Amino acid sequence: MTYDRLVCANCAAPVSEGRCPVCRANRERLQQDNLFAGVNPMALIALLAVLIAAVALLAHQTA
Image 1 (spheres, rainbow, N blue to C red):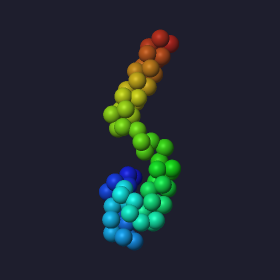
Image 2 (image 1 turned 180 degrees about the vertical axis):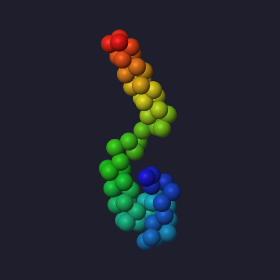
Image 3 (image 1 turned 90 degrees about the vertical axis):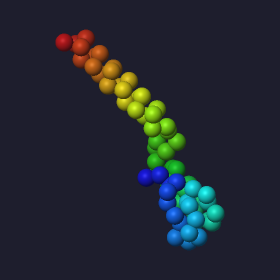
Image 4 (image 1 turned 45 degrees about the vertical axis):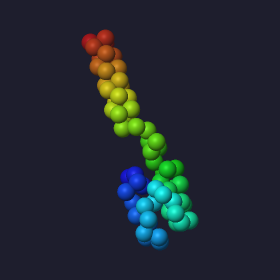
């Protein structure tokens, strides 16, 4: 889950803005918990395509 759409129950502001200590703490927790938080979705798709191509090439060479 991304924190850019979450609203803080403490200050009613977006968590991504980090207006209060609760927002900042939750923003830090979400950034640490999510391994791919800072990765562009297109980069993930490209990485997946490269991995699929590598597996297909390996399967073709062994057959």
